[in-house]
Image 1 (tube, rainbow over the protein chains, first blue to last red):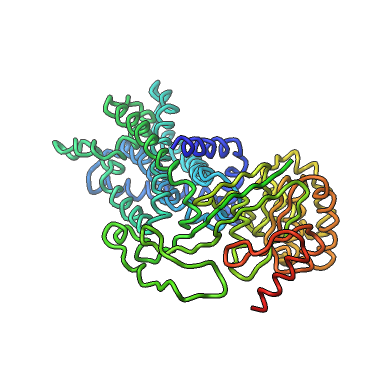
Image 2: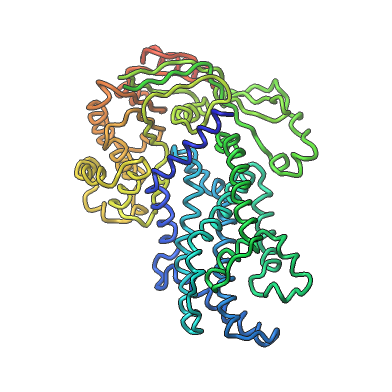
Length: 263
Length: 262
């Protein structure tokens, strides 16, 4: 097992030193998808913007939300959601989609994972423009809690990466998993406080705390809207990061070399 | 200084059908595999059998032991499915053998497929750059050797065109030029090399001579005995995943012909 752990560690170290490879391929993928389009990756920004307006108007008419605070709240929810779902669904397919390259070129396995993550972070940077627009329009001023954002985003990313890797390993061996992931994510949209507020569930609102995604979302939303993270938030985020990454790393170390055989 | 030592390496591929690839099946039953009869012999491919988990496996490489040293230029020949490509991928440490020991001393430069990591819309120059990065070259090194690469490819103005307009042979030139831009320690090539025309093969031979003579290892899998005769000083005949003959080029080629004749 020690041998396994060491090679897995070297795999990770090598993909970090060879950052040019995943940066190049992530960038190439974005350029390929939006080649010849005028807006390019800003199409995603626009799409989040349109969703925001649609759900915003709907929320105001049906739930009588007060639009001023609601739009900023919703904007963070939607940007988070578009990042998280595509990171997870693409992440769980990262070995399957790279099948031809995996058997042709010697490249660390984690490099394929980081490539997907990096691509989605670049896209997140584009969709984040929605914040700038909404926050300016509605005068949401940054508070001192915004300083926590780098820390909470790091926790958010760690807690996105290990499920990606775990699902990628499972998916390559059991081909039902990617389909399952797709179904799961669409359920999560309705069970995570993305477009509704926790408080609207009244005395049942504690149920949302059992959904890990709630805490990931709040890691992004709270600092942006100037609310401190709760103790429960911190405990869940840090606990999941440590336990999740640890367990996933062990599984990765054990089954890493089997990936090409399972393709 | 490069060296490859293989001791009793085995590579087996599990064959998943849609049933045992699914989670449901792995959790419930796994009996389909038993239907395979062990005595139907075929003349191509590795042997098909069941492993201890009742899984259908193809034995692609069966108990291989060999050594490759500095200056070795090895041509791997054999029928379709003999294990040539698998062996190259093992040497590249893409497939880690299930059992046996493989020590590879030296960095591998693979040249197996042509289009991996290259955006078809990218120009020749961009493709040179991305291919270089994929092989672990830094942009500075790529920049320094760009003239040499351009000159070798003889692609001229085509280097400003998107690579989707290239023929396979043109792509071989480009990929080969990048792979050999920096003296590779262990150069591994699959049959694609055969897509190059006669003038390319000649040029490539000269280029290979400049660095493979003294040190380093080159391994090429091919069906062309001409390439084996001109490029290699050793040959290996694979038959159904086993080494049938390894060593002197002419001896191995004649063994190849007798295997092919049946």
